[in-house]
Length: 221
Image (tube, rainbow, N blue to C red):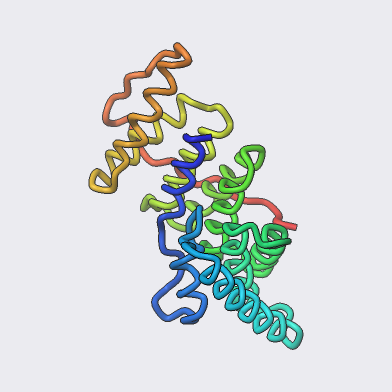
């Protein structure tokens, strides 16, 4: 559980909203965008819940008139993924449904692909295979440049599936491509797990440490 808590915090220490997004959604991201949420008192929790519910009602009303709005579905899905981080009732299922709806409308919405993958990885190790496919699918729209969030997410997806050698290799890839972003911590953690399980630590040549490329996605219904 300690390892799971650490890596969940690591993956969600990212900004998912552009600077021009809704200010209310952006402010909620600063509190609920990672797990555990940055809530320090009951009063703050009540205020956050009030703001969350108010914003969700706003998106609900908008979708009543424009039910296929990719933009509003995405925002409501992202909002509910934040709600999941504070265990708000039905937030996970709402986020899952909205983000999959976005991808049914626009399969090339990379942000929705990544947020859905993050939701899965943050929720249940049993969903790691689906997350793996989503991260690889996101990379399809970004090749030949490696997308850091997709490549980082693949580590977690591999790790939760028990694909420890792939997870370890992915930490080396991350540390090679983005050496200033703290991935040596994941390298150390993966090495420790392999040693504890008495598994061989594979040696890789530099030319073997290349990012994981595209794997096309299927339906999201």
